[in-house]
Length: 511
Image (cartoon, rainbow, N blue to C red; front, side, top):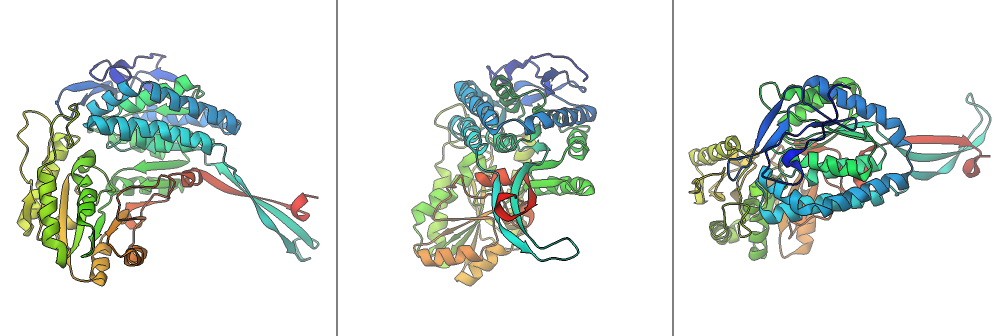
C-alpha cells in the first residue's frame, strides 16, 4: 500500500480550531493523500477549521481493496466480538463528546445544542444500538415442505433456513448536514452484520468522520475494516467518489444526498448490479386541517427554520393549509420565524445558524427570488441577515403559492417554507402526492381517524401524525425519487445483509 503510517490528525480530534493536516485512513494506516490537502471552512466565521486530505482515484480504489482483504476475517468474527468493538467505539465517542461537538459545530455550522445532542450523542447511540444488533438472530426456520417423487429424486421432506449473510464491502457516501450521526448510521449496522466499509464523507465537513475513524481504531476495529477517503469536490474531486463506487471490490453503495447525485450513483452501480441503499431528496408535505392544534403545527413546521437551518431532507417544507385556518396559520408561522434567534452557532442562545457554504446560501436566496417572480408573497424573511460574517439565510415563509411553482416542487434545502391552500381532504391528498419526492409527510388534525386515513393515502416512506418526532426503530426511506431501500433499527441490519436459503432433506432435524 502506498503512503506511510502518518497518524497526524491535527484539529480533527481535539481542537476544533486547529489547522493541522489530516491523513487518509486506509488499511489501518494513516496515508498521505495523492492530491494534497484542501481547506475546510467554518460556515459561521469563514475561517479555516482544518485541512482535509484530497484522495486520488487510485487511493479510493486502494481503500476498497483494503476493505476486501479485511472482509473474510471480519465477516467470520463472532457476533459477540463485533458487538464489543461497536460498544467500545460508542464509549470512546461519548468520552470525547465535547471536542467532537466543537469540531462538528465548527465545520458544519450546526448550533452548539444540535452538534452535541443530535450529532455526536446520536452517533454514540447508534453504535450502542448496533452493538446489540450484532447479536440479533440471523436465521429464520421455515416450515418443512413435502416434495413428491420426480425427476429431482424420491419423495422427501425438505427443511430450510433463511439466513442473513453480510453483503461484503460497503461504500458509505455521506451527506454534509450531519457529519456524525449519518456516517454512524451506515458504519455501525454494516459492521454489525460483518461487512467492511469505505467511507466517503461530504467534502464540506469531513473532519468529524476522521475523528470517528480514530475512535473505531482505538476500539479495536481490525485494519481495513473501516477506511476513510475524501475528495475536495473541486474540478478533480468528483472522480474520487466515482472511482470508489465503480470499484470492483465494492459490493454495495449506501448513499445519503441529493437525488441528482443518487441517480448518477445508481447508473454506475447498475453496470455491475451492485446493491444500493439510497436516502435522497425530500419535499415533505405538512397537511394542516381546520381542526388541527395550530400551536403544535407551528412548532413542528417551524423546525424547518431552525433544525440544521432547514438543511434536512425530512423537513416539512411544503405546507398545505385548509382554507379555514390558512390565514391564522400563516400569521403564526411568520411570527414564529421572525422571533427565532440567529447568529453564531457557538452562542448557546442561537437557534438558526448558517448554511454550509456561500454557494448554498446563494442558491437558497435565488430560490426565494424565484418565488417572488412566480407570484409568491414573502410573509417572513426574504432578506440576508445583517451579520458581518457567515453564510446566513433568514427563516423565510412564502405564501400565495400554487402547486406548479418551482419553489413548491423543488427541494430548496434551507430554512424556507412554502404554503399552498386547499379546500377538502381529497384535494389535500392530491396536492401532497403531486411531487417527485416521497420521504416523510405530516398530518395535523384533531380527528385521529381522519389523520390515519389520510396517512394511508400519502405516497411517502413515513408519515408523522401531529408530530415531527421519529421513532428510531421504525423503517426509514422514501418512495419515488426520495430513495431506494429502508434502514434504521433492525431494518438497517436487513439492508446490509443478503438472504441465503439453506435446505436439507428430512424436515426439521436434518436427518
